[in-house]
Length: 413
Image (tube, rainbow, N blue to C red; front, side, top):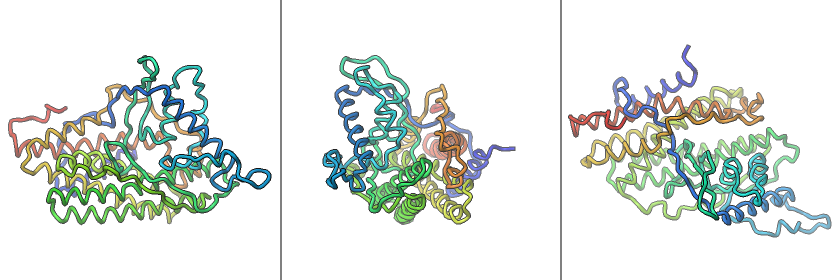
């Protein structure tokens, strides 16, 4: 019997290929393609100290309940609550407690943080969006050098200078103080999903401008505009679920859009559309379908299936845009597309399977439409192999036949 993730991926591949007007899938030119090559990144030790101090402040403000009044014994404001927390950081009330414990377990007098400690620091402060810190390497004095790998993006991220941006979520109404650890994790997970979906509104708005800047067909522009409205509904659904699990009510902080539209070129469109759309939306569609199939709530299942249908349309749009660009007069775009896809190719050695957090084994986690970390990773892997890789091969091979009959797909394998 076919593995469920493989079956879902095969069906997704056929639907996306049909949206491109395609025929049966061609042989892959990108076998083994995955997310993110490794990079060795030096970080100043003094900068790490500042980051730990900021996390300690956030943890102290959480303990003092600053986000919900933070009253001291005599009725005044707890002193720690008077210290300003940077507005451009994710508010501490949405931090994962496991990451806080891991980050603060670093004792600076012992030297550089371990990879696990630095990954926790990066994720809490939004410095390592989708980053897996794999190793600590010898480096220059006063720095800590880490081997890091970019993980697969969630949906269509809003990338500026290749870094994802999200708007902060602010709490309007107190959460249920009696919430269990599982409930707090559900609130956190749905809030993070809401931030990603909310950022996708901006990503599609920018896509509309990029398409218009390169005189794209109106049908593509119209689809991008419609997708932006879909993402607003997705963000609202995620926040509704966070509130349902005891998270109170939320409002949005400002999204930093500076520099987002600095480069309206066709080349930048090709790069961002592959990363945000062909990759991000395709993987998101597969995961959303799996979430819809695991929840025990008929109403939530219906709404998640609708969300998955819309994510599939967004993924199809990305592939259609790539197809349109590859059929254009600039023959260098094919090689650029190959390089962008290959920039996501992992090392030959497989990554260690992600560990499932204890709460992810709870039946209520799955009933709420949440996937285990290992399950999501497996869906991403299978979708890469059975959807992203073959679709890229179809479009790139087609462009090869049209522009350079003697060039073979093996040149990029």
